[in-house]
Length: 265
Image (tube, rainbow, N blue to C red; front, side):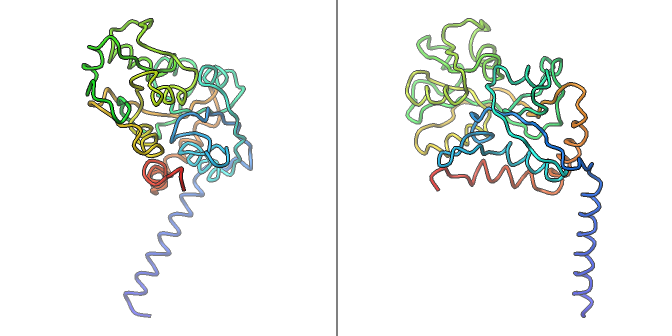
């Protein structure tokens, strides 16, 4: 064997050894089943496959990979956004995910994992929208409406960063699910929906020619998994998440759902 080949083989073995050691460093949950909840209404993070109805998306792939590395299984459950945080806080579910922004108010109710995604808020509009091009233009036309879910980051951005700070402003139309607000936008019932850029890219990609984003970012947010307060899963999840970030797996998952996924395939 030539010196170059020997060096390459040694490097490969070293890399394999480091990978094995890293995996061994993770906690072993011994086949434990983790009860996780999501909404299936936040493309491309979590949604129902249009062909099979099966729950798919970035959060599914990411948390399934976390569980695999921890030697755990996932029992996936569904719940609406308006009850999810309380249900996780009360222990009905162990882990929750729905593009949930990490903030102090929610930290007072549940524990958070480390952030797995940082995203900025944008205005999603219909592709033929020409009445406004930014938040100021939208705010200046009293006829224009924004769709949102009560209690979400998007709702508060609409209230305080786009409109006048009045949470009862009649220009804000509330919907039970995030997907319903986007459907209303497509139907012309509202004129914009605020969402993180990654989700906006997902809706634009899944509906060619239907939507676009306008204006500049309205702020940034970090997403995390929520856990029952005091959960023994926090440290293992964070350890696996750190490994997934470090070895490029998270980047690959993001690429799959933000750029490669096509619902028509």
